[in-house]
Length: 88
Image (cartoon, rainbow, N blue to C red; front, side):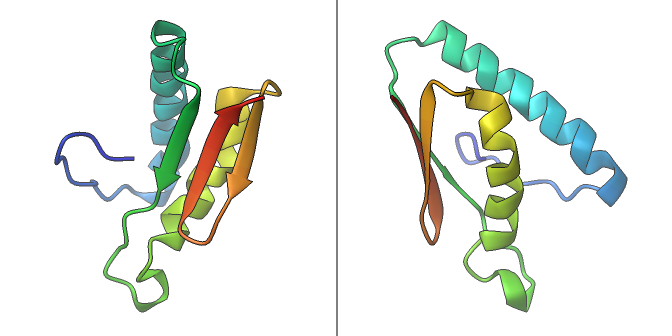
């Protein structure tokens, strides 16, 4: 996730769960405040690692949390370089 030009900060492996928990709460709050939005798109910013030239490592992490964020009233469609979440 990226917000208005802010860069990703690298986190320690042990902090990932805490960081993602915070992101889940932020996105859920955003959804509550913007009920008219019916589609969200998530992409993973690539890292410098050879295996992550297209951002798939971060996207896989986000994908694990999408069901917790959106619940059963949303459809989640995974594509090669992005995930699209839309209201059912």
